[in-house]
Length: 255
Image 1 (cartoon, helix red, strand yellow):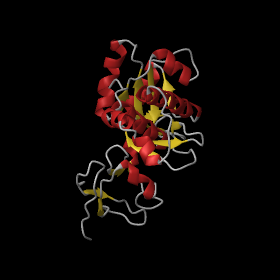
Image 2 (image 1 turned 180 degrees about the vertical axis):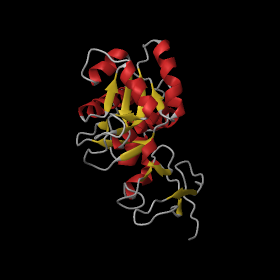
Image 3 (image 1 turned 90 degrees about the horizontal axis):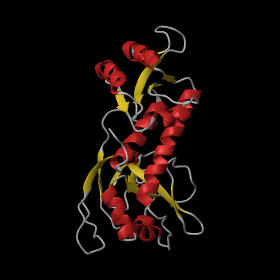
């Protein structure tokens, strides 16, 4: 396949970037393709899903590059022209994807890239970066609540300590046993309890998340407050990790 050179909006040649394309029908490493950088105006001319319906690849309107959507945020433009973040990626309409990077968010705002990519007037909410961080924190707390309702969350020092020591939630070998996927600590909790749990979590490679206060964690778990929490491994924990990564990339995560 011949390499093609696209031109950016300022007349400079864009660089073709090799991007892996997963093939859902085959195992093993995916074959790379050459993904051209294109200006935001040209995004409307290509499908939202860059390499097929099942592909995770999307084009960032800020950089013009194709990448995995796990590190991007989807936006849609409502019928009345209002830009809306779509963190759950379920809103109707053609999505505009932007890498979770403060520099690219500011670039999209300062250069009007949402309007260029949508080819229409777009009303951008005030303080979009702050809005994104608040929505991501709210979504994370909602996901933690879902984990609790599904029996995939434990709170309390002794329960968390036992889970981190055994690596499972529930009685080892018992029915309904689940592997521990994430460890949460209230950011306003005492250092003593965290220190005692740190070695156990580190030995098992279990990640610490300390974004929320004890009142926030408690509300998500249906109690007054919570300091020490573990969540079961699985798709929900993967969603939470992704949200933490995006929030961290936007400057809204503590660790």
